[in-house]
Image 1 (cartoon, helix red, strand yellow):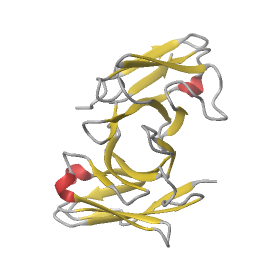
Image 2 (image 1 turned 60 degrees about the horizontal axis):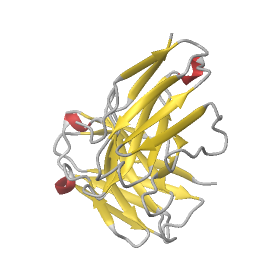
Image 3 (image 1 turned 90 degrees about the horizontal axis):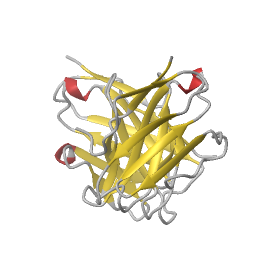
Image 4 (image 1 turned 30 degrees about the horizontal axis):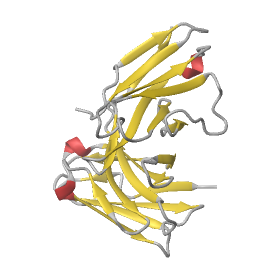
Length: 121
Length: 110
């Protein structure tokens, strides 16, 4: 059974760096084709893809946020970490991590419950 | 501005059939699988359709989807009140080198 759970601060100040951790179980991030992605959703708005890390440690980023994002993994701990620098109130959103089911155009099947991050001074 | 284009809203009465469209390009829908997700208020997205038209176990067969060229559509027949939710289409995008999301469609059951 695949599960994912996001953790991190729920309140950050403008200009601070956000660090979110996705702790997962039920799969290995070293299995060919597998990946873990981060997606966010501002209140009342649409889903937005942020970053993706693949089984071979290949990393992909949304072009619009690339300069602010870093995604890493700890395969021993079954964790994926996303950092986002220079936070702004417009970054207030629910942040989700999700399991990518394989390569060749496959996408996310299992999602975490999400964590609401509010950016305010 | 989302990469994939969906109508912002759709509606139907109980028992009706509704469809939600998703338009993309040769960089995404035209060459890759389309996935569909349902998001109930206050919850995480749930996978409804993968590989254009396949349903995960537990998704009823009144939910179906198709793809043609650079467009895709989701169909829900026998509409129920519990289908009221936001629906998102997603496809891998070769130019983005990542997933492209639609802007979501809010389905209202009248």
